[in-house]
Image (cartoon, rainbow, N blue to C red; front, side):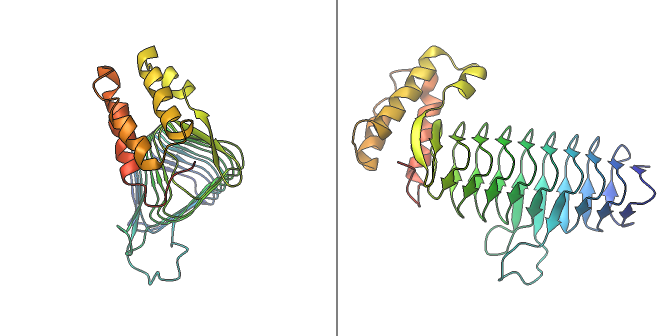
Length: 262
């Protein structure tokens, strides 16, 4: 049996692994599934069609799986899906998706999500991101992997944040932020290439050099976005070990429906 505090209310239909721990005064609804090794703190509410994976640590007063804050929502059985190994701190609010999108709000693996973060309907958060206190994601936001989002930042609906991107404190992000780019300000402006995160993950000097080249083409040469994209494509074949980063950037720019931070 899961270790459930006697004051917690867990619906009999909820599916909790026997190793799950549930704190005092927490409420868990009937359509919730929680995987092995996950701990849920006190005074949490986990509801809706919510699936939580293994070895997550959910702190007190989190609200997970509530209805989306969307006036079009009519009670459809949309979902919240959370992966493995996440840290989810106090007063976070993650909502389920809407049928106007794919019906799923999704959080990946290994994320460090600090207090008061809001993940709205239909957001997709990747893996190994650090999301600081008070970050607010509007609906349909897509966040890649290994990003750093500074505290009190706000992200407009439908915005995309690429892998290894970084937002400074209190950034207002209303356009897409490309991979490996550091941005800050209200509104956001590109500041520099983000090298420290890739360096810590083992990027070679040659790969880091390609990141610098792509940043200069986007932000330092006075090129149009299309011209910069073509120049970045011309880098292919020069540094074979960085082909993946070049393809990542090109794919991101091709799908930039809202334009990018410039």
